[in-house]
Image 1 (cartoon, rainbow, N blue to C red):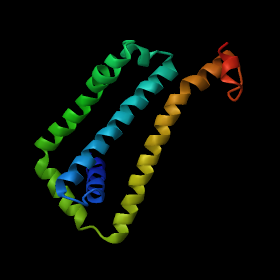
Image 2 (cartoon, one colour; image 1 turned 90 degrees about the vertical axis):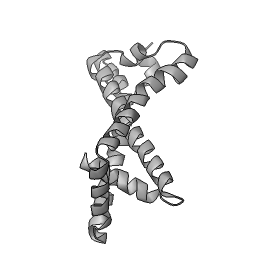
Image 3 (tube, rainbow, N blue to C red; image 1 turned 30 degrees about the horizontal axis):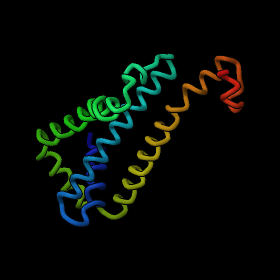
Image 4 (tube, one colour; image 1 turned 180 degrees about the vertical axis):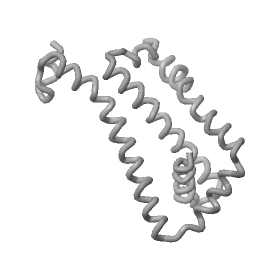
Length: 154
C-alpha cells in the first residue's frame, strides 16, 4: 500500500495548484479509478480465459438502470474502502507524505518513472483484457487472429 500512498502523494502534488483540498480530491478520484481499472481487468480476464460471460451477468438490459444504478453500485465500494483506509490510517499517510517531501531530486525522478511505468502497464492490461476474449475465440475456432472478425463469428 506504500506505493499507492506514493502515487497519491505525487498526484496530490501535481493537482495542488489551487488549494490543498483540490489536490486531495483529484488524487483520490484517480486512485479510485486505478482500482476500478484493476477490477475491470480482472473481470475481463476471467471472462476471456474461462469463457464466462461476467459482463452480461452484471448488466440488466435496461441502459438507464445499468448506467446510473448498477455501475455506481460496483464503483462506490472502492471509494468507500479508500475513504475508510484514509480515516483509519490518516496519521500514517501524513507521516509517509512528509517523508516523501524530503526525498532528493534523483530519487523523486526515479520513483516518478516507476509511477508512470505502473500507470502505463495498468492501461495496457486493461486494453489487452478487453481484446483477450476475441483473440481466444479466434484461436479456438481456428481462424487467424488478424482475419476479419466478421468472418470468424458468422
